[in-house]
Image 1 (cartoon, rainbow, N blue to C red):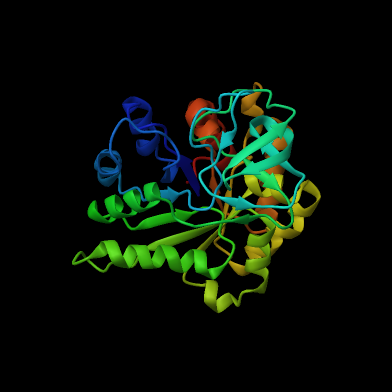
Image 2 (image 1 turned 90 degrees about the vertical axis):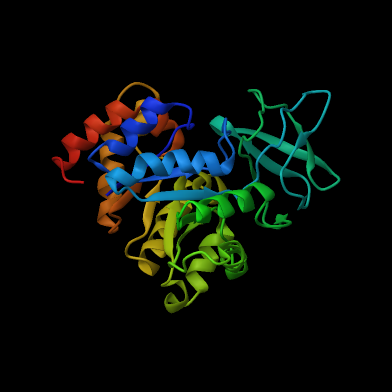
Length: 308
């Protein structure tokens, strides 16, 4: 089963092509993506396209994922994050492209100063990872998350993905928000996918009774997870997730060869390895879905023999 990540909603032709493709069984909207429209209008446009094809739409909430809230004016100013943090210094900050810097200072909880400066511009909405065993992120759902939860429920959408889940309190916060915004609307059960992206997330899955996790779907969100725990720890982490949820989703770092030219034997071997662990649901990243949609679909047709 294949899930694609949708582009920005104003890209109407690509949006429709993704949703309509017969090999795509569900789609994800990343709320960290800037939209030309309000949350309600954004989701309404997606829902209008998805309903005729009976395609499930997952609304991906950012929650505790660390992101940049404004373009960084480096070297004159700090990098401003969406959450306040506490951490023992020095620590390591990972920017896009595995560009790493040392975290030197934290001011007012969410303004960070790094050295050396990032190689590439640090823009609004960009995700960052801080590698430190004692990192604490204050708060959970952000105002934008609440806006999208309310908008989704108003549009009759009931599938959510929750980023950087590390304990049951993270899940309960989302469930409470859903209950609050439902008001008198239908009580159709919501599907919640728990995105596991950190060592704390893996420990949470490993230590939590399977019966408590059963109402939810787990996701091995491999991009941030690999940055957080390192490549050598990935096999055990992937096994922990699939052992707790036989229908867990394998997300990101799929078909990476497309970023540099063409799908490689490494991409095929990766898929075969994940299937050998019993993963059967795959979700392509923002970049692969958006920038390489057609070659990715051509490969998927050949690889699966046309089986969704």
